[in-house]
Image (tube, rainbow, N blue to C red; front, side, top):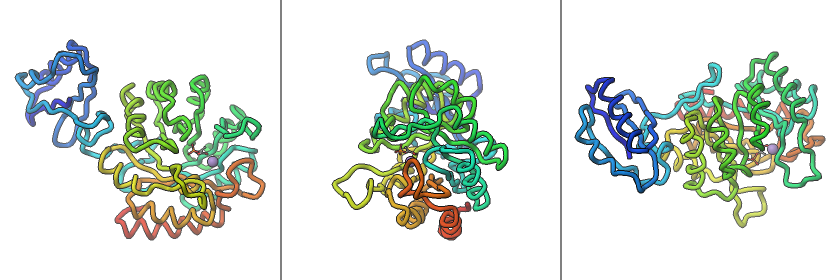
Length: 337
Ligand code: PEP
Ligand code: MN
């Protein structure tokens, strides 16, 4: 349910509503918009009905949220969520590009990539130090040593760090290095992990599970929001279909669908979404035209020697060209990069 406060309500009236909702056994989430303050009351169905709150001073209306996702919905929060990561805003007018290698492999590899993507206009550096690999025999990541390399690259370039968490047990160490915690496609419905990052005071980039419907995906985001972390960003990265020419099928429908259903920022990953470096630029352009708030692009100084995802990684020079192209698309869309 959402409790819409009237235009002239007082702080005391709002506090009284919050207290009442909590007494009734629901948890309360506030959304203070430009025009309206909305109180979200979330809890199990068998609790006392909330409709009677309409009688309270300062309350304008009590409205059920019909969708199963509540805090993620546009009904709960009309205005787009803008996630601020040390001065870089995601979800606002500017399109943010996150670029870097799939895995952190060495200091030189990360430094070379970081310098190149920063010069080309990326605002954030990505790189996995804990890798969720399909095969247990594949490179699993440099772990904390890899995080130290990312931090050194941040110190030199100012790029914010986006890196993946694969296990709740790694959260404490990751919090020391990451600016954004990435939850990967394979963990999109790992509810223990979603709860843990939801309790952390750190923005989260939640990638869509390769077989998660949009509704299931938003329910995954709801897990984080319900723990009190509102800095959640979504990222379409391709889904499984019958098609085998590409690694996944990049579901660009998801961009306008998500933008309509949720206030959370929506990013697109054309690297994993296609699996082929040649397809990255066209799908990046299309993603911006579809209305995304940011891109996640894999870049490697020597894709042929990459320890993971080389075939979908751009060389720095190609990334530079991509940035020039997408700047023009962004401009046509009334956005900037
Ligand atoms: C990645 O970003 O390197 C990654 C593993 O992505 P995904 O979880 O989307 O497969
Ligand atoms: Mn990858």
